[in-house]
Length: 200
Length: 83
Image (tube, rainbow over all chains, first blue to last red; front, side, top):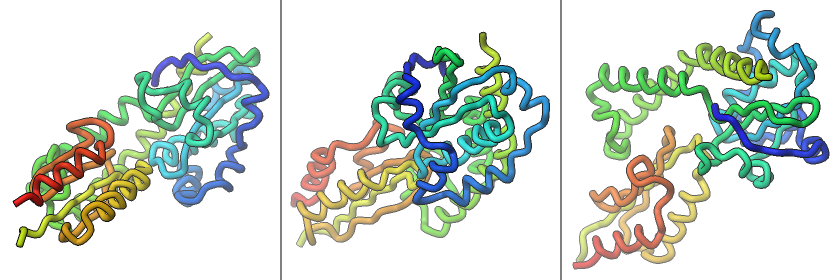
């Protein structure tokens, strides 16, 4: 997460899709988005920070990106439970003017972007891609997988040198790891978004 | 007769890198045709974009950053094909 420097007009914001329209526009991974929507359970305590004032939320995504189909449904569930959140979704590659306002580290078109604006269109804060805590946990779990499976070789080596059957098992292990860290990741996204909306 | 030369492209299938993979493959097919023994495309994850020519890792996104310049890959192929 980083602080953003973006600006947007209400007219430009209204050109975005509702979350349902974005889902209808998807060409892949809609099943994963809807699985996430079903999976996410929000407590009243988690929801409370999002119900304090009206906010506009500009989200930028793409249907092929795991961080988008993982994290955007978290925001959508919050918006479904908190009518104070006015969410619009933009496709990354069709909205370069917006995307280029929110480059990660000033360089990378990382997604999802979730930019929060108050009722006067003043930007409050921005979430980009995923929480650092999630990156760190998954990196640690990845190292543990390689330590437990010497046949996978070095965690830093290119995978194309692995035999195909070993490569397939590695992909399977990485998929299971991702699944096992999903609830933690969802909680961390809610926590980081709550920290943004509680800013003055 | 030259030894068979294979090119492997490992790309992140979760990152939308298909266009770059197909552009590079298309360029290699057009430039080298049957002088390459095969072009292997490996769908992977984890932000990968690696290109190996023979045994040489010509480009690695994690090592070198970004996508390869196709001219660099072509130059590596020509070097390996040279007797």
